Image 1: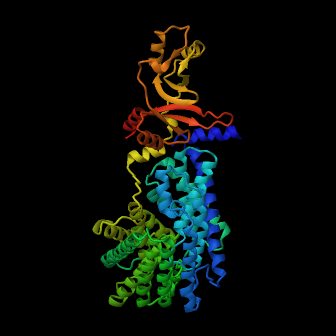
Image 2 (image 1 turned 90 degrees about the vertical axis):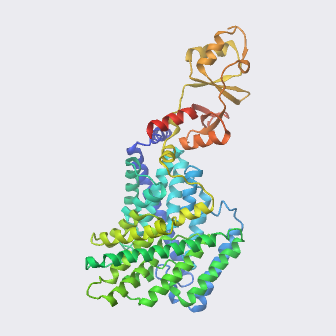
Image 3 (image 1 turned 135 degrees about the horizontal axis):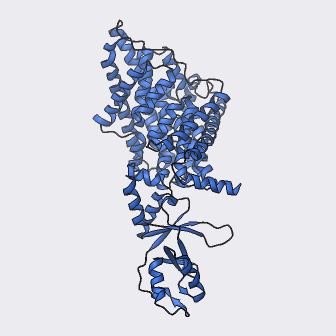
Length: 574
């Protein structure tokens, strides 16, 4: 079995090994699908403790005093729990996943995932305004990253595993596998390759199959068939996109300004967010929780114009503050509700003004859902596909595309607003470069360019040590003393110097006047991104690739990579 796993690791070191990565996709999809369903059940069971039914979303049935007390008490308890955690251990959600993918090369810690599961479930069950999809992305990515770490898979494969977990989480939550795939490619790994696309597709299919098998319902929402009634509505559809984009800009700005209070006590911040949510819930109970029950009412046409506008405004304020203070909830679900309410209001106004031309308000609701989601995540393609999959109709595609593009252009083009996760990362001063060079280095294992013709050489070289060195003729020699690696020299330079020395005496290599290469180390699982980062961090010229030995205290030396070899590789591939 160990040999089989070692062979599999070797296949994964090549990013183009589609078959090897396809197996990862299936395993990753199953794992993420099961964990996301477990998370949803945790929310339902916790909410049932205080008599909140309707799949953990029926907060409207609570008495007014409970609608205020529940989110306040829940936020206070979460704040007390977070108070004992370090800032690093508090990080959860999509922002945490993206940050760790770049700063820790896809290594997601188990402690943050455990916090996301229990704190996220408790937050949503206690009525905090947010969604379950952000936690689902984190949990799906984390379980796959931990699996890869356990198997000691190359770090470049962890990126694919996290993308598989993301796609599986979205697919399991909404039964929208294609939207899950595009979301993972568009937001998480920000690249489209055959080697990355195929395993992510398999992960989404596997997670969707798990969801269909283990849950009673086949769809997230019951949506009637709709279509555009007249092409005269196109400008009005664009106007809806503008409205959704404007709402998203307000949402992100509130979150951004709230996040500036991060230096305050986490207890005070969380409790303040709970109080805001509780006060809003006294007037607008639909603001509590995920809001999927309210979304269903909107789709069924059971909400009046003023109710739609009030719910949208309250949900924007409550969710933006909740996310801004750092409570462990997501934003995709609330963005769908906000867009649905705005779309419903625009649709009703259109019907009142021009009933003979206006389509059914349900069309505007669906289009608004996609527009708000696309703008808040800056993922227009994923939003378009989500709308198509949710409605099972291509008739919605054209108006949805127009509104989603209009919303994204309003947010990113007119108001120069980044996606919410990008805004938070920038505020945290986390560099997440997404250029082609960075993508290439992240997706390439060190074994792709590593020179394995390297030997360890003692600084004091005896005649007995010299003979095997002459027979092997290595490219690199790692000079060391008493178990400590000192520097690298090129094999031909060392052999040329040895040829000038007395072959029968012990020589001191440190006295040789030959070129020395400063070095640091990376694990054998590392990507070229990690190798280059270590070279820059330690201001050295090369890295030695090591593997931890099970039988010896000295690590196994696999090869050498120089800064020059990385630069040559990138120039040849870009």
